[in-house]
Length: 493
Image 1: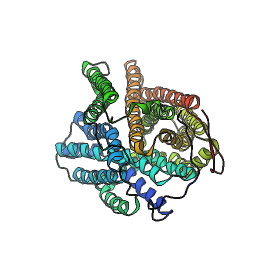
Image 2: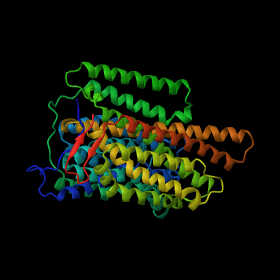
Image 3: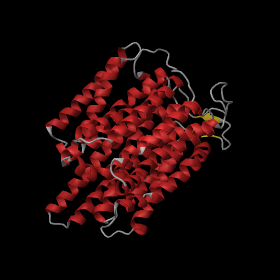
C-alpha cells in the first residue's frame, strides 16, 4: 500500500546544489518564470479593446487572442510534464521560457490578426512546458518537509495572486504605453530567468527508466485536451447544446478513451494507469478541478460585477483585489507552511476551501448599489484567506505519492486539472450568469439589476463547488500527521 509521508529533513545531496541557500534564489527564479505565464492569462484581457481597434478584429475573432493561448496551453501540459521526466526538468524549463519569451516578442511586434493569433498559440505551448515542470523542479530543490511546504506556499501564491496582478498591470501598461507592451514586458523577465536558471537550477538529468516516448498516446491525449478546451471556450458562443459543441466534446471523450486504451497496452506508457491508484493524487486533482472552477469564475465575474454594475474602472478593479492578494501573500509565504507542518495536508485544505465558499456566498448577495467596504471587502478577505491556506496543501497532496521519475507527469496532471476545471467552471458559471440576466431582461428588469442577479446566481454555484471540494478533501485524502517541529511524520492509512 502506498503511504503518504513527509520525510525527515535530510542533508542536501552532494553535487545537487552548490550552496544550501541558493535553493531559495532558485525558487525566486522559478517563480518569476511561472509568474510570466500566469500573468499572460489575464494581462491581455484589459488590452483587448485596444487590440480590437488597432488590428481591426471583429467581436467574434477577438476571442481568439485569448482562446489561441488557452488551446495550446491546456493541450500540452501533460506532454510537457512527461518530456521533463524524460529529458530533464531544467532543460525543458529553459526551452519553455525561451519559446515563451520569443513568442511574447512576436506578439508585441504583431501588425496583423494572423500574426498575433499564431504567436499566442506558440506562447501557450511555451507556457505549458514551463508550468508542467515547475512543480517538479521545486520537488528536486527541496527535499525537507518544512522547506518543501514553504516553497510550495511561495509557488501557490504566485499562481493564485498572479491573475489579479495581471489585470492591474495590463491596465497600467495599456493606458500609459500601448497594448504591445503587455507582451513586450516579458522580454527582460524572460532573458533574466534564462540567465539565472543556468546558474541556479540543478542540472538533473531525466530520471525516467526509459527514454521511449509513447508517441501515439501523446498525440491522442494532446488532441483530446485541445479539442475539449476548444469546445469549452466556445461553448457560450456556439451554444452548449449545439451539434458542433456536443460533437467536439464527444470526439474529445472518445480520444481520451482511446488514450486510456493505448496506455493500458503500450510497453512504456506516457501516463502509467497505476497513477490512478494513488489516492491522494486522484482526490487532489478532483478537488483542484472544483477549486479552480470556483476561483476562475469568481475572479472573472467579480471583475465584471465591479465594472458593469458598480462602475469601477480597470485600475480600481485591480486595486480592489489587493486585499485578497496581500492576505494570500501572508499565508502562502509562511503561515500556510506552518499550518501544514502542524496539522498535515487534509485539515488546512478543507478549512481553506470552506473559507473560500463563505467568501463566495458573501459575493452571492452583492447588491446593485454595493459599497466596497461592506459588500466587496469581506468576501475578498475570506477568499484571500481560503486561497492562501488551501492551495499549498492541494499541490503537496498531488505530488506527495509519486516517485521523482514521474514528478513531471504528476505536475502536468495537476496543472491540467486546474486548467480544465478553471475553463469549464468559467464557461458554466458565465453561461449561468448570462442566462439568468437575459431572463430578467426579457421580463423588463433594469439591465443593471439583471446583470447583478446573474452574477449572484453564478457566485452561489461557485460556493457550492468550493464546499464540495472541501468535503471531498476532508473525507478522502489520506492524512499526514506532522509534528510541529517538522522533524517527524506519521502516515495514516
